[in-house]
Amino acid sequence: MESISDAGKRQAPQPKWLTLFRVALGFILFWKGISFIHDSSRLEEMVHSTGIGLFDTNVQTVSLIITYVHLLGGFLIAVGLRTRLAALVQIPIVIVAIIFVNMKAGMSVSNMELVLSVIVLILLIVFIIKGSGVFSADEYFRSYYKAGSESGNTKKFFQ
Image (cartoon, rainbow, N blue to C red):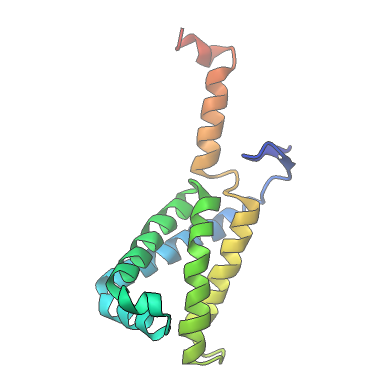
């Protein structure tokens, strides 16, 4: 069985086990957003340590944006709603975290924050390519609107 993506191209359906990784990725990003709320001074310190001049002058604003992008993006990815867009918005934040923040802490495997950031980046790229999958809010709404436009039992309720 094939599914049709938003662009109208036919693609192979996503494996159902990949849904677990999507939900886990969403929870990780959401959890990071909550941890940034609890310790906003640490996030502001990390943003300041990047050495990017634009970030230095707007540390609080950038920290606030990062926090809420992680919260909203993590939620959207977890439920599978606009997954590609939510993952695309997360990628620049994660890349900056890998290059400027985690690399300064050390390149060793014992640096779990770096390992987690790289895994999150890989999963974000996977879900930009693969989409949200069968068990997602996107698929639910896609099938809901498709059922509403077909003739049959569903159509009778709207006549």
